[in-house]
Structures are given as structure tokens and as C-alpha cells.
Amino acid sequence: MDTSPAWDRPSSSLYTDHYELTMLQAALHSGAAERRTVFEAFARGLPDGRRYGIVAGTGRLLEGLASFRFGPAELEFLDRTGVVNAATLARLADFRFSGDIWGYPEGEAYFPYSPVLIVESTFAEACILETFVLSVLNHDSAIASAASRMVSAAGGRPCIEMGSRRAQEEAAVAAARAAVIAGFAATSNLEAGRRFGLRTVGTAAHSFTLVHDTERDAFRAQLDSFGPGTTLLVDTYDVEAAVRTAVDFAGDQLGAVRLDSGDLLAQARWVRELLDDLGNVHTKIVVTSDLDEYSVAALQAAPADSYGIGTALVTGSGAPTAGMVYKLVSRTNDAGEFIAVAKSSRNKINVGGRKHAVRRLDGSGTATHEVLGVGHPPTEEPRGRPLLQQFIRAGELLPGWTGPGAVVRARSRHADTMAELPAVVNRLQRGEPAIPTIYA
Image (cartoon, one colour):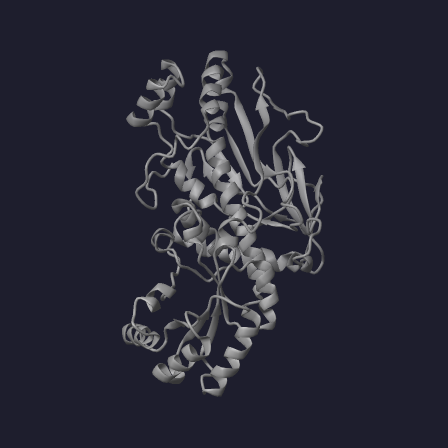
């Protein structure tokens, strides 16, 4: 596997749960550790009322596997705390993932039981990836799914990710990446810009105005530093006075004004009228302040030009996890033959067997079904679009799935998949998944 991660990072091997390593120890004892297995990551359902989900995090996951190693520090911790025995420590010291990984590419839509990620390897290798796989996919896909709804509600107006201060620092970086994959135009997070090549934006907060003796002093300093094309925050004191001051200083070259409080719908309307009356017909209006997809949809009636979205985005807008699970669906028996396996449960449906996924399209190219074949590709799907792509082959990362270029491609893929789905995906009302999942 490629061992050149996109940036310096510690080992990811302990981003896991205690029981995964104890399972490994017991499997080494029983001999089951070397059985070939197939694990699948999927969601049994979508968050309540959601009609689709968007895959994100796969690139981060693949990069993280390059540093999934048990070095001296990790082995010393496991030894000192007695998590596993000496034989297991020796096995972990040599750990390198050598299997195959398939999945839905980032930016692709998924539905209940879509096999978002498929890990084919020995039980010893595949089982200890569970928590790392799920922590990345559940977080990033939740953010991307919320972001996609916000982009849809914005109706073509740019959305800017501004949620870093409402998330753990590493989660904030991942959230920015997921949001851009799902169509956000930029992020305020500089580390996300550095790691993933994202466009970063930002100008000033209320504290910048308050630290100056007057609002005029603050505006003059910002305009002198960044030029008239900057965005001025105009609601620290009196909005009308601030807009007039901004225009007085910058003239009709003023880039934008930002509104961050009050009745944004009404305020944006009269600020637009004021700007137009002052001759600033090209000055844009940016609105922020605890927006989500519902408030963004309501602001479609306002002359807002872009939206800055923070808290709701980085918390999944009510769905902070995608609800994905990682289940063993197939393994070899003593004869070396693959057999389907699945947990038996009344309230948690599991279907054994390695899945193959196709999206069925009608004559106009609109998706109608998510079709899963168990143990074989779905048959008789002349208009079906295969969904699974291979990311890792025999432990080697295949090109194109990581790095800054991967985000650009995933963003384009998101636009394509949204165009392919039925129009119901643009509705924010509660409802069933946009297309049903069937087995064939």
C-alpha cells in the first residue's frame, strides 16, 4: 500500500475499540484469523425523513490506512495495559493490510443497504479496521448528506462552510472536506485548505469592529488592507448606517456586505434596496447566523447572494451520524469455499453474501432502483450503472482516490449523481428514500 500520506500524521491503528484486538487474539488461538472474509459497511436506513445519503470520507479512510501501523509506542501501550498477549503483539507488529477494498466513490448517493464499502481480506486484517472505517464514514457521510440538502435548498447560490468553532478540531477539518464534496463553494478552515486544496474565505468578525474606536475606523482599515472587493460585516451597531458608511468608503466597487443577525429575510430585502438606491447594484449580500437547509430554503425569497453555514452543517443538521454498520457477510469454510453469513435478528435485518450494486435507470436516465446482487452482479440490467469501484488491490492503493484531486472529482461526481436522481430528492419534507433498494 502507498505509504506516503497527504500530510504528517500519527499512527491511526489505535483509533479502534478494545474488543477488536481481543477478537484478533482469540481468532489467532482458534485458527479462524486466517479465514478469508468479506465485510461490508452499510446503513440499514436513512436518518428519519431523509430521502438519500451522500458518501464521503473514503479518501480520508484510504489515506489513514497508510498509517494504520502498530509501532513501538502503540505496542508498548498494548503490552503495558495487558490488552493482548505476546503472540498477538508480534502479529500486530507486522500488520500491513494486504486485501482488497471496494466501495461507492465519494460524492455518490447511497440508500438503505447500499454496500458503501466492501473489505475483502483475512479476518485478522479486516476485523481490526471496523471502528476506524465506521468513525470516518459515519461522520463524513453525515456531514456530506446534510451539506447536499443545503446546497439543494440554496438553488444555485453558493454555500460557505463556517462551522469549525462548533466542532472538535480534526472533525472540523473533515467536515469542511465533506461539505465541499457535496457542493459547498469554500470553507473558512485553513487546515482543510492546506490538506485538501480547498478554497478558503473569510474577512472579519464583530470583534474587529468593536476593537476600533468607531465603525468607520474599522471599515477604513479593512478596505485599506484588502481593497474595495472585501466583505464588510454591517450589523455590529446600526445596519443602515453601516451600509451607508461602507458605500461612502468603497463606492460601487464594494464586494459584499454580511448580515449575521435579525430577521434575515426582511433585512436582506431592504439592504438590497438601499444598496441599489446608492448605486451599488453589484455589491453582494452574504447571510449567516445559525442557518440550516430549512432557513436557507426560506431565504430563497430574499435577495441573498450566498450563505455561510456553520453549526447545523458540522453536526449533520440533526443527523450527526450516518448510522452505518460494518458486518461480516461472507467467509471461507474449512474447505476454503466462501459461504454467506449473517446475524439473525428480528429488528436488524442483515443479508449475507458479498453484494454487487447497480443503479437502475429509466429511458430518460433517471434512477429508479438501487439493485443489489448477492454473490453475483445483478442480471438483466441493460440500463444499470455499476456503483462499486475498487480502491485497494492486494494491499496497494489504486491511483485517483486520494489527494486534492480526489475532492475535485468527488464534487463533480456529487453533481452528476444528484442530476441522475428523481426530483423528489430536492424536497425537504419528510419522506421515504428517493428510490427503493431491491435484490436481484
